[in-house]
Image: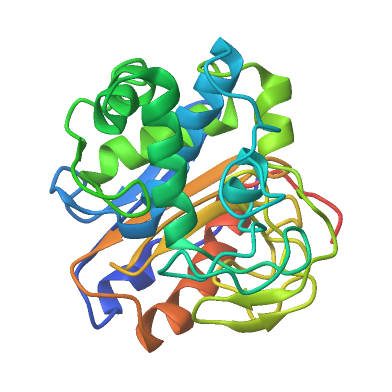
Length: 277
């Protein structure tokens, strides 16, 4: 029998107040902190927005190859931060599929594209397509498709459980979304510098071989998820069969860069299935 120390014990020593939840295919495996307190998700919102877009694709309201954004760009390019748009403006910095430029503006445009196609406000579509069917009853959304969600860790953990065992979308859609889109693109991972390649799926960051990174050394390259400026994250390691979610009362900073990787390694040591390094 594997005996390990409490993988969440270190959270109490962090210089911020945080809550962490660990989920496996059998449900909630561990938690610490106030799991019911609502906090901003910041850019982790992009996971919900990407799911809403993918629901629209499965319903036929949108298609991944529809033109959207700069000339030559599509819905898929916007989801994968490969449209060439700047981070926070519609300015075009590169041709599509030549650089991985993380773009909040691209997700704003995705929201508008879905609004136009569905003929309903993005917030209403998001609620009907993701929040309600996934039972994220305490999660609210206002403002930006890039960063407008807020809710408790219990709901973020439910999202992690959904991504471990998809029910909202067809498994092949989730597999496509969490695989590398437009491979071999270099770019800057916010907060962690230039990465080559800077792997990304359709709305989901893919860990790949990035170094440095906000997940741990034990995370498989297939790990996917997102972190947010509010000090939030959700990662899902499909090889290990584990998801980990965190919300904090302080913005991302050096504390997170130092604390998150060892936390991830401890979680995987305690709860993950072994996988090749």
